[in-house]
Length: 236
Image (tube, rainbow, N blue to C red; front, side, top):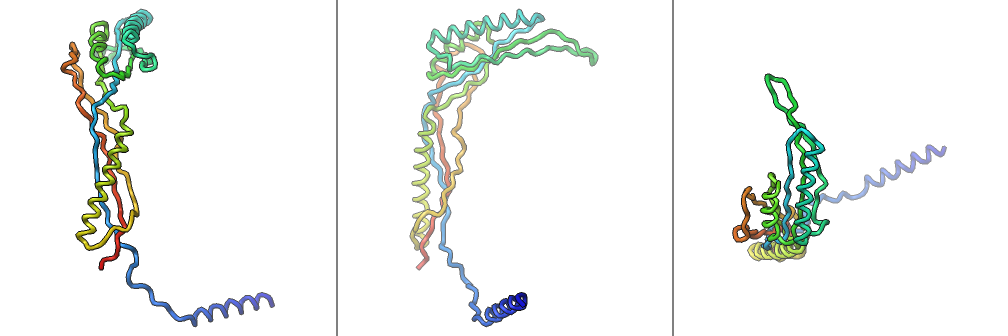
């Protein structure tokens, strides 16, 4: 009996629903019109940080003797850096590698010796300090130097400035488009940041004597890019 009662209720509900007047579907979208604009801005600055990587390497048969020689050269370089006021926290010199060296004759592999190398990475808060050190290193056993990397210490702050300028430019562009279309900007619907990370300037250092008057850092541009979608009023 209870099951029949439930079925009657369902049938009655469906019948009432069928009697409701049909509301015609909306034929026009009521979404507010929008305009999307993109903008970019950059702030230039002279790099004030430099990172230098080099490798102390020696070839031979006696691994302990090779390591002793490499460590002696490294210790000399560390002493020089400390005398120049470079903190130990700005120096990395723990990475050491021992690589077997082979010669191939008629497809046969023959061990000829070993290469012992220690990599050093130095962060100079004053980029001008790197040139005298590089000259000293090349004259005291260093034969391999990687490309220095120049950076800006306050890149994050400069990026925020560029981001603000990009947003202001996007607003100006949107207002010009809205004025031309005869509408007004009602607000911001969406903002997307599409910037890459701050760039790092790289340059090559010749394996020769460095001079301060020719080692110029130039400028870096910290750039910000955004995309903004603005809500517009209905056209008159």
